Image (cartoon, rainbow, N blue to C red):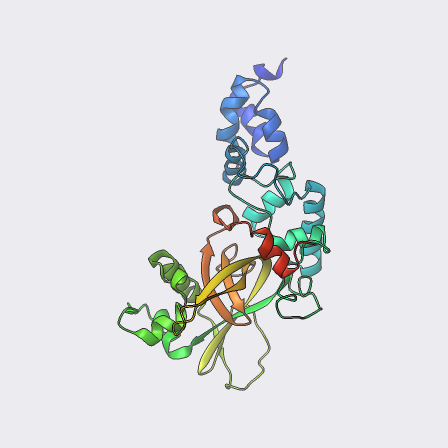
Length: 300
């Protein structure tokens, strides 16, 4: 019996569990499989299958990372920190067959540092005149969100806060113009409202971190385990002089809890910088310019 003579149900069983590289080969076997592949695979693999046929933005792509390196990175991160990388990012790392990322995506700076520490550094050691690279130290760590407890209580209570009228509340959560878009604001409020457990501590207490649990004092702090992704630029305009200064913030992937898989920005320790994407598939970070990489020490 030839494979094409098998019942359609068996074809679908065969195709359902194929990793992406095998799906791409299966797509070219015959017309029947070309029809069945999109209907049989998982939503994540279907997304990547569709991207595989789109043109690339960069030719050549300046920062290729091989599948072998990415598989090593996945194994290293997951075994070292006892986590599982969120699925949207993990499947791209572990199954995308070529060194160039899918259309519309780029390889995060943290992955490029793992691939080549000499050329992949994007921490701020050069800007801060600090000779110690922090890329490895911050590859997976606990970051915090800090917010005035009185405001947090109102968010948890579901109060419809008028941020246009309440300037202090607006600046507490949305202190940079890019973060004040309606959808970004909604996602930030959803993040804060996703975590309701708390432990009461004094303002000066060094309470033991418990992931996903608010440390409640005058200001409440929420510790989250994050995976470092990339640096991104943000311009701050001095209202007095009108001069613009560029700073580098970090995109971080939340790996545990209610917001697992989401990507958010942090400007510095406990300085939350806003929602970026629901998952890696939706993250649309732009490549840094070469002069920006050189400033960070990412180009040698």
